[in-house]
Length: 275
Image 1 (cartoon, one colour):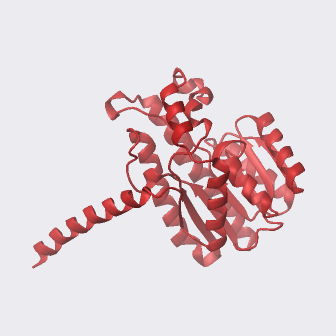
Image 2 (image 1 turned 120 degrees about the vertical axis):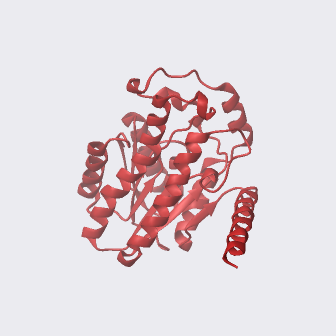
Image 3 (image 1 turned 30 degrees about the horizontal axis):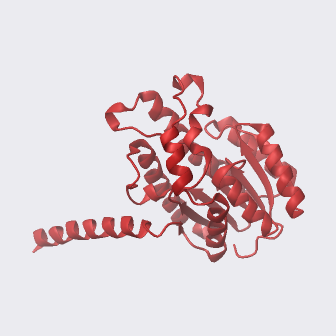
């Protein structure tokens, strides 16, 4: 999708962090926006700021990315407000640290519900409408460096599992919907300076007690994290170029190369059995 002027994009988790960075980059290209997040007032403020700065139309709404009825309502409103939608940015996500034996069932259910189910729900809702609309469309999914390898910055096993799942989902959508002119881009960022370190503030009570803000994670993210606006520009440039993968940090090459070498060595052993 090379020309984004007057295109309409819906961004889940669009009122802060990477989602807002992508929104700002799209607005700079002349795209109109619907920003969703758990907190409608925050979404409205972000949308107004972008509309005032870039002269585009932007709407901020409250929506829970992990709930089917909320996502369907988001899609219905977007099409009703703008008449068409050209791009879905499925960005809403949460993160947790801790080894596998330390993680609770509630931790698993919450994180997978937002990261994996939320992306599936968004793609499901908008793909149906993209097919009915019959025009070229774009899906941008926020994965992670952990979609392709393990982070060197501490163990996050269920987060890694969720981001590996998004790689598989994005790859399948790319293959299944290419014939319908639906392009897919997977953004795989390393550390980004966002408030995900304090994501427990949004943990619903049905998933157990909220953990205290992790000051160690905050310090790490703020010291090492890339600016979210730069990540947004990189993502949008990838969309315009028709790229499937967008990586943000040079060291991710080592993760990819390490995985490739290990898999190639395993395939060499497979070849030996065939002789």
